[in-house]
Image: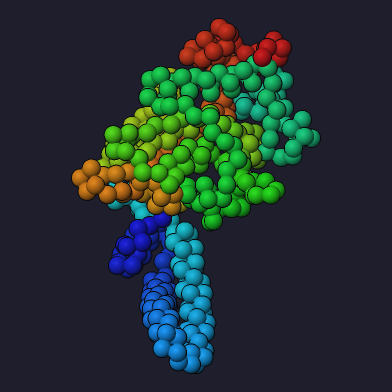
Length: 431
């Protein structure tokens, strides 16, 4: 969440900064709630002090043998008044907290201005799209012709936006995930994590998915409601929830390969064909917990780690700095990596790398002890896809397709595929 001190001391400045996102912060309404909070806080403190003083007076009167009935009646009135004041204060504080939880993060000054994704700024590009001597097909046509992608069977089992992947392509997806994990743990210094796939609502509040984006989540109702993770960012970032991390332990760098589950409630009618936008998909996620002064250098590093995946796979891509209106709720600055898809003749997102600064840390009470002040202060949190496995599979299928419908296996993945160089109809029986 936004620093509460800044909200109270400079709400007009907060409104100005949030306007860069296209978000309108109602300063008058906020000030009105703050005035109510202060009023009921003062009234609660006054009545509590009066009740305590009155209790002493009752005790003194009882010691002198006086009739205390009138004093007891006054005590009841004070108690009732205090109870009412506490209820009013609690209601106002709950309204303020909910408002704070719904406010997006403030943007870093380097984020480009803009009203939509058309204002995103290209800041880098790698590789040149392959020239095809034939009309390239999309991953759906290729996978179905090989008998290795089965959307019809998935539809019978689960409905729309699911797929069954078979044999050679299933192995290729597994190879992609294993390659990414090995790269990030062996070369980039991340610790591999196997996290829970079900998380509590406080965990999702901590990373910013709740309360604002509950419609995007899949809930499992039982004795306690749990949610299927939309990304491994949630459990991995929450590893430092309610913790004070020693300065010498930072940075913390975590990676995990997990399934991810999203309802795609806001994506009706978008990418309905194929594997681009599904309810269940896999990612290799990267999370860093760092000192505040190091977080923007860490963002560039994390982005580089994700780029290395695409470079080793020899997939053309570009890097986009997202504009204010396109930057995610919890992020102060985000880079998107967009991989080239020949069938669409354009780049499509395959990774987002974000610095959330202290936004998530305040919600999680995740802190470090600053040696300069000796006091606990919020850490900075970063996350990024390193990368989305399903979209990487799509990109490999399309960029490495052959005219006969087979798919070459990128050189870096062949050790994970038992040396297999080509996936063709014969790969239907391979796993």
